[in-house]
Length: 542
Image (cartoon, rainbow, N blue to C red):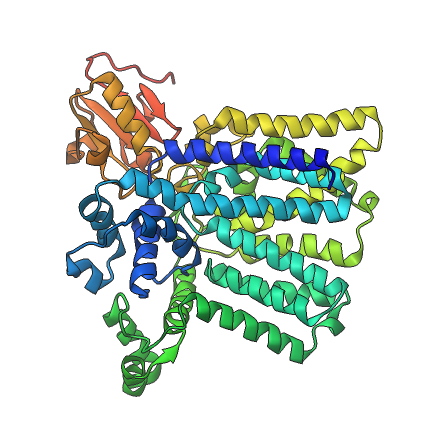
């Protein structure tokens, strides 16, 4: 790379880091960070034990735990939550009793994910540069750096960026391998796939995707059974290493043992239960959690879409979420990429590698019942970035007007990130009026994941409110942020009193009167504040 290119890459990565640091400092811990990731990861690291929320693999948690180890964080002294494997209670004790510096711990737990995302961004640049040249690399990097969804999750100590990175790395290495098959290439691809499995169980999608890429691109000869076996062995050993080569009975140190005993008894009777209680097996936590996740996906979650709640979901949920949670210029570039696809002159292997995972994600998730947010689609974002980068390069060579359009779309995309900062998690595009209307269309981690409790505490302090009736989405402790709160009275869900209320966007439908009364302020687009101490409520116009 030339010095000019290196400086451009460094500048873009620095801007990305600055955006993330701004968000990291501003936002309180999200539900998953506090209840499931950070404290659980610290217990994994110092105890070499995975009983705390084993439903998620340990790699991103372990990364987030490393700084806390050097900060000298303490484990909770009460053994009850530890013995029961109750991760939310354990996390509360970890942050607010055993340690008194929750904000500092959360800040440093998020930093490793930021560093991982910077490596991720550079990977996107490298792959795009190999396809389209330096201009394409910088275009893809720009799309990554200013994507609100990417910035949001790069600022959190969760698993979404980690699994997206390892998905993309696996696709890239497999693409390289199929171009020039070698044992070394297959080894690295297996390591990357193992990293994906250590990040999130959705990595199971990698196996059919990679196989289909090889077959559809007519490279099936590069993956004979012996090499497939080697790939699977490397992947498996990587996963086992991530669990510190754990060998234990399946039912030892596991949450909800009675439920698991009942299930095992149902499918295999008493012999299977005794086996699970007595016989040590490798990767027992991984195998148990992987099985459990299939039951969770089949059972479903309570999801929200465009004014309606459902326990079974909608086939078009992720289509809508993708259309609303991404910037309009990025969506325009995707559209233009389809229009000019033939002009990009992609070979069969590259075309298949970029498109097949995208198609697979949308098709496989259509019957999904556990629809909790667009973050599950982050693994395919880089493929769109790279494809759109090729379109930008093509347009820049097509003529002045097209060049102006391409550069203008990139600039608009960057401006969107600047305007939403630091509320990246709550970003929605202008098609629905922006983030102020986001809660009407999507909930949960799409807009309100408990990230604005710190902002609420600051606002209450500025206003000098003596008391706030709080209906909050998340496990963080309002007392830590100096919020003089009380819970809602049963009557207050139907009729408000003359007091101050703070209602989470995720729960706003449960407070019936919010449909008729305008909020005094909205914190980070996710917490609605109503100062109703005056007898004259400001009603919304009909």
